[in-house]
Image 1 (cartoon, one colour):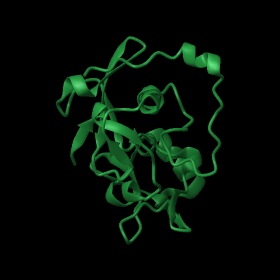
Image 2 (cartoon, rainbow, N blue to C red):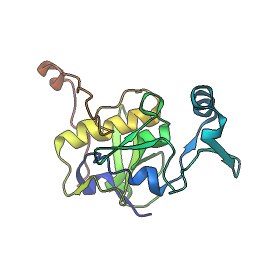
Image 3 (cartoon, rainbow, N blue to C red):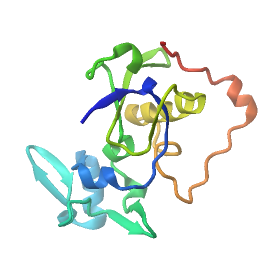
Length: 180
């Protein structure tokens, strides 16, 4: 895996390709595990190396991945684990993958280091657009901090309406500090 700083990404949109559900094992927290087991049964999860995971199908994909008209959809959308909500982004307190200045994102006076997994097909490389910097990256950080549950920018949102933000709200939203 190669992680790139968010400031090398012009934009990102989930393409519902299912790569994340096929290539990675999803670690779930104990609370997420309890909710999944309560709704779907213990056989939908596995444990190993002191962690809890979503079970995979024989083809290696997550057992909750469904293909509908050539679109890959999550069967856990209503209770999607945090690891799934955050992929392909890594939101860290320290610059684990280098390029600290390019990974830095300041939100509410706090410093975060945000990286993107280069394996994701939804990445468009280049200078970040205002929308990506002000809304998409911010949403991933808020999900990582636990201050946001709803996903608008950080998922494919097939059939999910985006919230309407009144124009006057944009005067309050500050452009994130970019370090070029």
